[in-house]
Image 1 (cartoon, rainbow, N blue to C red):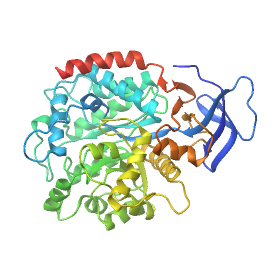
Image 2: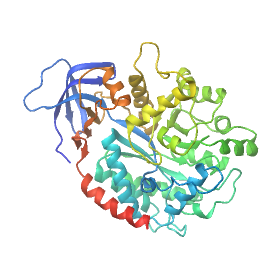
Image 3: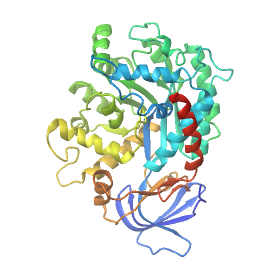
Image 4: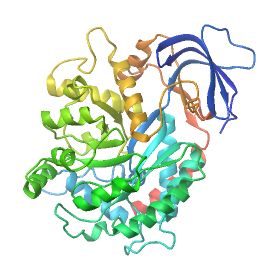
Length: 449
């Protein structure tokens, strides 16, 4: 990694009140101490073209980075879907060690930083030994994730996942889920150990994540929210049509409607996917201030469906973007596919912006604000914030810079990334990429065997 510059000068920077030109950012102890506008660079300033705030990746399962491309073969005459992909993932889960998870996670985190994500919400549900017994340190897997964050420099919001059941109504878990499963006492121990594992990271945060309504009982859901009264709460919900049908059979309600009636959902909550919601559920999410965590690349890869983003934004809803299965890690492409999904389903262009507004800017601003809320840290290039910055190459063209980065091949690319003022990406490459990629290649080759 490169040394931390004390001052960086940009031809333009996207600040909370809009674009500014000739911007000089001063950094003290990893935080933004000064922002000067319309100033000439000084001799010792690092100089770049376009500054953007780093984005939050609101939803990642980093260990799944190792199965990219392994589930792209149709298994039989019946249609393929999420549930078939899950069986491939469960086979991987059966063999990974904490050392493997540290290596795979570091590779994913390198690619996130190179893609413009400076903080990750790691939805961490992979806890135990292959037998299902806890490790001597119940947070051994969480410590592996934390070590990868420390090595790569990415900011970490760790979301230990509570997973107790294999289906709605408290069904027994399946054999492939044994490395996930806890009871409430075991999870309390895990949560405390996870806080210790993350405690040494700069700006590290630990939230809590009930895996899904099918994996927890109503009583467990209420207890989990109480375990982290001031921290983010994330949950998978309404990702698959089968999940919706099963929830109706169990409760008589759709998943989001049930959650709104039985949990104190507020701005701390991130509802991951929420793909299959009706207008009443959509309005309720927006009214509560919860963030929807959208992962368009993974949702497309798994055949999940398309979230009704146009109506949700019109209702004042907030969203963040995540890389989920990490089949491909690219913040710009997540935003592009979010818009393109709407275009394909509605057969219109520039769906998620308003008349005369830049679609790229609308998407980026939305992901910045919603992502920061979802991971529990304010976003934006502002005084007192962590100096988490992205520099784009190319011309200084205001909103057109974002439109070209997100939508146009050959447009601007990510040149540099800083995390707490430390430059971790230079000329588009993470400083530790070669060593981390070499370790990852060895682990991936073993898994393929």
